[in-house]
Structures are given as C-alpha cells and as structure tokens.
Image (cartoon, rainbow, N blue to C red; front, side):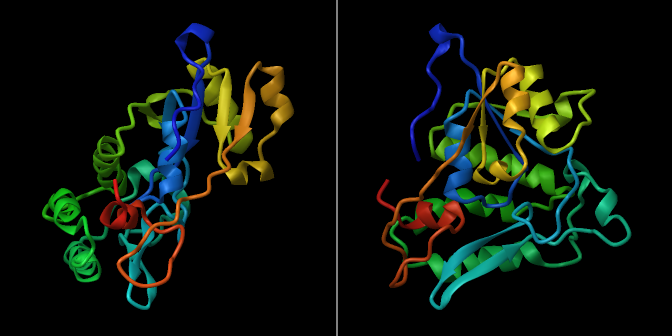
Length: 233
C-alpha cells in the first residue's frame, strides 16, 4: 500500500475516492482508500452479478479459487441496491469459506493471527451483504492502519445521478478538490465536467507487490487476505 495522496489540511485539499462495497477486496481497494481523505462506500447503486461485490479469489495449491457469498437475486436482481441485497443463508457458505481458508493457508506464516481475525465473521449469520462487507472493512482498515474517513452514499440524501455525474455530485457534496478514480474510470469519467466544477481527476495506477505465497509461483490480484496470510508485515 502507498501512503496518502493528500497534500494536507493546510493546502485546503480534499481528496475523495468512491467504490462499491466488496467481499474480501484486493490490495488495490485499500490503496484507493489510503490515498484519499474521504472514501465513499457506494452502496446505493444496483448490485452487479458476477462482480467483486460478493466474491473474490484466494490462492490454492492449483492456482486460485473464488469465495462467493450467495445472495438472493431471484426476481429482483435488476431492482436491488447493494445496500438492500440479502444473503442466501440457505447455503452453508460460512462454513465452506472458513474451511477453505483454513485448508489453503494453514502453512502460511501469518495463518494463526489472520485466521483469528477472520473467524468471527463466519461464526454469525448475516442478513445483508453490505453489513458483512462493512464490518469486514473495519477490520481491514485497522489491519492496514488506514485512517481515512469512511462514509456511505446512502448517507448522502438527494443524490440519484448516474456514472460520471454520480461521482461528480458526490464530490461536490463533500467539497472535494480532487477525485481519485479507479483505473476503469477512463472509460466513463467526464473529466471536463469535473474541471468545470473545480475538481481535479486523478486515476489510480496501482501495481500490487509481489510476495512469497503459500504455494510455488505467484498469483497476482487476489484478495488482500492472501497478502495478510503470507507477506512480511
């Protein structure tokens, strides 16, 4: 993870970054948070099937595998905001995820400490995906010593725009001077509109570090849990 991009309070700058909640996010997610003064958890947009909102990859002996939190989507997939997405607890996903983590990381150098941190999340039932992601986010931010202010888009009443306009409206509401966009923002961010509103746009260009994993070879872009289990921190 890099240090904060923020210039500091004396310059009057406010850097805002925005992203949907994610289950066991990758390191780039936390880099994006750490480089901002305010990070907005975008929980008011539509849930996206097969995205990183409810799944991510961990390392196994044969490569990588997905850990996916099952959600109730039948008949409402395209009408559900992330904040309202319910977990399908008829599936024994918590036991499976914890067992998979234990099986694949039992020989990792930091296994005992990290599994101790993660286990409580699999010992209680969660109704909504957003609640699970929010609680896990607190743990990850503490682990990586990130002190960025976290708010949710659901706390910002009256903002119902889309895509680039949504990001700009959030930045305006929060008094941002800089918007830190993800790399894919190049595809939809209207930089001119931001400039007209006095907001600079910076695109994240994150390259995760290589480190020794529990198995030979290196699989990049996995959940941050893999880094936590293996890296020398």
